Length: 400
Image (cartoon, rainbow, N blue to C red; front, side):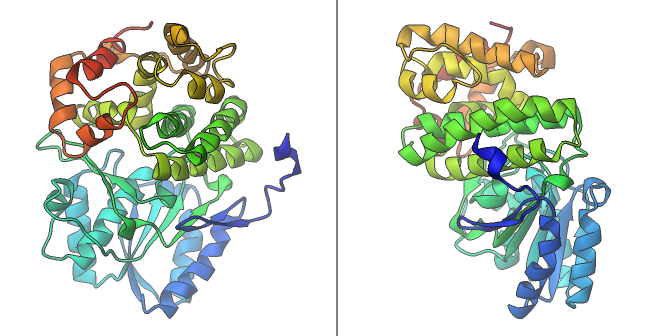
């Protein structure tokens, strides 16, 4: 019950590798951020966003005023979509270079921030393209400063070194991880998240759960990533139903945002494995598929597969959503079904057949041909063979 002692209107400064301003009203701290940027000689920036949310949430009112008040010029690339593409990144980078941008402000969910991180790299490597980044033809060690204003509670990208961008021509959706793309500052303000639709609310929260399940069970998991996982799943189990019941519930949004931020830190340490490696081909083949929905479709099958290898960790961290697990390897199928039951209880019932994604061989091929994804599979707890991947996909075609 520690949450009851938290004043959600008191903005906290949380230091990871990124300084995060966290709490209701945190958007007002952007004026301080703008002053720091100007002091560092950053007098022009590119603002990365989708078409509507950055304005509809009210975030842009604060950002635009602070940029103007501090004499920082800006150009806005407002074409970022969910599952951003290399075309988005290249177009935005061209705009940024022509304008003379020295920094990146991302406003939105994970997509604007991931695309913004990629643009920040290209500002330091103007001869390169987004395809060079995501085909891994070079490893950047510098990027322009990044500020992430987060409008969802799921991604965690506002506080870690990861980014994901899709190459539509190849159906590749790789992930990168470089120290140079930690945002300098981030803002997590729950009042900017109340306009999320019920579907978005579900999907982003499920993304956070997947982050920590993987980070707690990977080959490089640590006590830190496991302890963060316990807290994240407990908070999502408690506050997701409240946010669905009342989207304006700032307390619910606060603790879901906190869970998501912790999830980002957790997988920055424990990394990711099967669920994300297998989801990326889904939304690469079908870009309109929400990343969080793809993860929800796969999660029960992943739990069933990995439970025998990590029964004690999973029984512990899943307790808020999968009761009465004893940590015995023989409970694998039960664990998968309990997680599926929880997903159904929060309104997510879709499986691969519902999304028309049943070509298991093609999806499996993409896991092993998309740059970076095989590396995630290799740190999964149940082996890195093709059969493990196929089994998870096959068990995700229909409900258990």
